[in-house]
Image 1: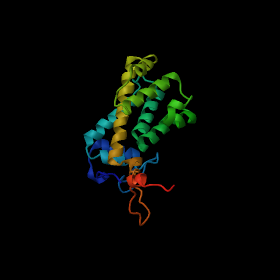
Image 2: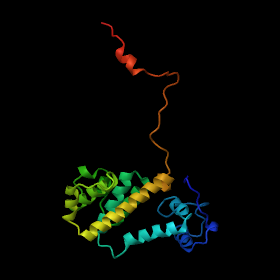
Image 3: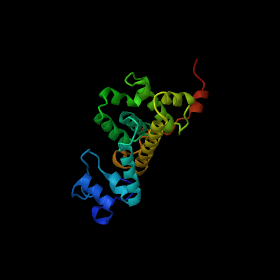
Image 4: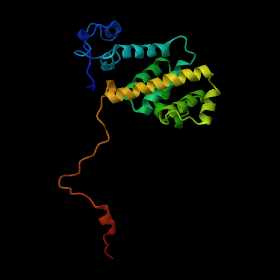
Length: 216
């Protein structure tokens, strides 16, 4: 379950929160009866409702990237968002934006290749440039080699690159937040844990094993 408290319908009078609850959950209380039409629990919304102006700011961000004023090709935008979800390790962002890629007509081959895009022939030169740039934003914290940026500029205008950078970085933020707060599909236990040794195992001294004489 999420690490923060969820807001029940009866606990808020914020107009936008109630509007989004109506849109996503109908007349249900989303805490008592979770679940959206896309198959998510919906707890991103019930947790962000804790601070209504933060929720409003996030919703405005969703509106910004979907605005008809955007110059960036939506397929390139979704490649950046989906790869950011994968690179940051967010099951939620990656999964949701795979669906967005499909809705834009992206082939199943391309969607399946996003995790290992650098070994795939499924992408065009501009798409490969976008994916390489996204990896620099997420994995390298914005440290972008000139060669990567030059490849991007060979295909995109300055305005398109600014849009790509802003939207991709915004979705890296969402990927990070959903993992930290254990929201939606990122409500998962840490997979890297100690695996218990067999009962009675007292430990293994590697140094002693190496120094022990061997029989001739």
